[in-house]
Image (cartoon, rainbow, N blue to C red; front, side, top):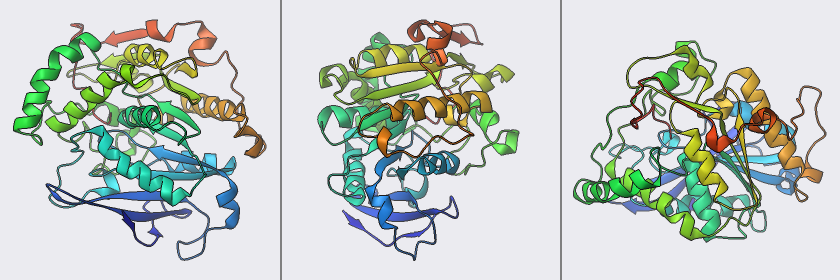
Length: 373
C-alpha cells in the first residue's frame, strides 16, 4: 500500500483527503481514499494535539460514501480524532472502468482497514463507526483481528439477510453460481428511490450528497458483492463473540414497498429489516448493546431531527461510559441532549427483536429495498 499527499476534500473546509493505492485487481488499479477532520488547509501540518486524541474511523455502507460532515464535526468537537474511508469502488475511490461496489469477499476490505490503521498510527486503536454493509465488514474484522480496535458503533449493520438465515442459506448456492459465472453482472432489480426521497435535499430532505456516488436506488448490485455479503453473514456465528464494547443503533420499524412511496418511510428503515438486525446483534455476545431509535431511517444520522439528535446523544453518552474514551472527551456542550438508558427501544419497553415490521405491499416478500446498504 502506498499513500499520496493530503488534498482538499469534497466535504469542504476542515476536511482533507488522501489517496491510498491498494494495488490492482482484474479491472485495473484499486484505491481507497482516507478522509480526516482537521482545522486549516491541507498544506498545513496536522496539530500535534490531534494525535493524542482517541481516533474514530467512519466506514460507509454499500453504494455509499463518507458524506456526513456534520456528524464528523460533532465528534471532532467532542474531542475525538475523526477519520473516514471510502472503500474501493465506492464514492471518492471509484475509477473509470470499474464496476461500482464490486468485491469478491468482504475480507478484501482488510486492505483498506489495515491502511487506515497504519495512517492513524501505531498503538492508536480506533473506535469504528460503521454503517450497514460497513457494519458487517467491521464486525468480521473485529472477530478476526481482536485487539486492533477499541470499540464498535454500528449504524443499521447488515448482519443478516432480510428473510433470515433460512432464506440466506437457500439462496446462497444460486448466488454463488452467478458470482462465479458473471461476477459483475446485476443480480437484483434496481432499487426504488424511496430512501433518497426521504433524505436528499433535491426531494425536500436535509442532506446534499452526491447522487453520482450514492444514486437513488443504489448502483447495480453485482453478483460477486451479494455473494460476499451472504458469505460474511454466514461466518458471523462461527467467528466468535465480539470482545470489544459494541453499540448497535437502528430504527424501530421497517417499511418496504415495491412501488409506492409513503410519507411514513421518512421515519422508518426502507432498506433492511430492523428485526433481523436486532436478532443478529444479540448473537454477537454480551458486550453488545442494541438500541432501536424511534423514527430513525436506515442511516440513523440522516434521520429527521428528533431521531438524529437522540441517536447522536446515545452514541455520545455510550462513549463517555467507556473507561479509555470518556475521560478524554470534551465537556458536554449546552446544545447536547442527554440520552439515558430509557431512550430508544429501552424507553418504550419494546423488544427490538420484536419491533414493528411494516411492508406496505402486504405480501411479506423480501425486496431489493432502496439501496445504500
